[in-house]
Amino acid sequence: MKISKRQSKILKAIIREYIATAKAVSSARLVRKYSSFKISSATMRNEMVVLEEAGLIEHLHTSAGRTPTDKGYRYFVDNLMRERSLSKAEQKKLTLELLKTKTAHNKLLRRTTQLLSELTGGVALASMLDEGIFFDSGLRQLLEEPEFAEKEPVYEMAQIMDSIDEHVKDLIEKNRNLEVYIGEENPLCDAQECATIVSRFRLPSGEKGIIALIGPKRMRYARNMSLLDYLAKFLSGSLGAFLFLGAPDILSNYF
Image (cartoon, rainbow, N blue to C red; front, side, top):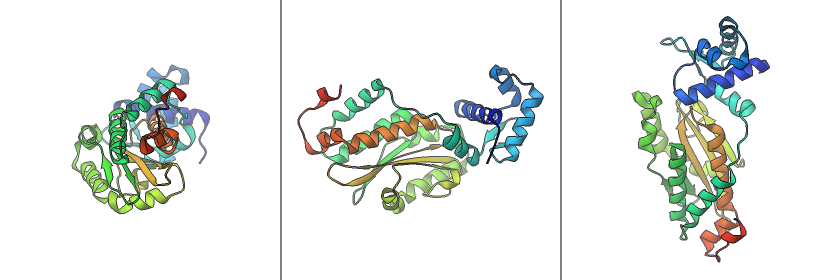
């Protein structure tokens, strides 16, 4: 699919606005807020029509604005999103929190999901082959998001939670370290309003597992992906070995 540079910028702006507000985005709002476009409202409307015809945004009947489609989010994640790495301060904060858990991996994974849920507002889970799934209590805060005001998205979320056990092994065994599933791409069930990010790790002992985040499609993809990537690398690395194997204190080597 090819869209122009300006259309790409408009799509990116629409997604940013929708992520921030959960409200359909109008051409007038974009012209008013993004003066760098330097185009009229009529030109903006024409460009948005092109994006709609390409299936990247859609026009809700109840609003004059547009919202991103699954295809639009996918185009954003694959082509427009700027990669983000956690700052040294963020890495240090996460690491120190996890280093407080000097115990077996079930407690560490529970703490990992708690941190991930607290930082993202989504439902976090972790699992390892032949072991249980560890959820954080992030479901309530997720269901408070505007997307879940209707029954259908809540039902979809319940389906995801109910079906995870059946799919964990397949998710763990996949080759890619980090994957994003948007809407109907979700491997757990047909979840139109949800997105799932899955990051895989291998403990120093060789055991494989996943950390995953489930949230609305209107999520902060770059930040959430960087968080999951860091946590997976943490669990796979020598700091993970310290936690799981009880090695001597090695904090001074890292900070």
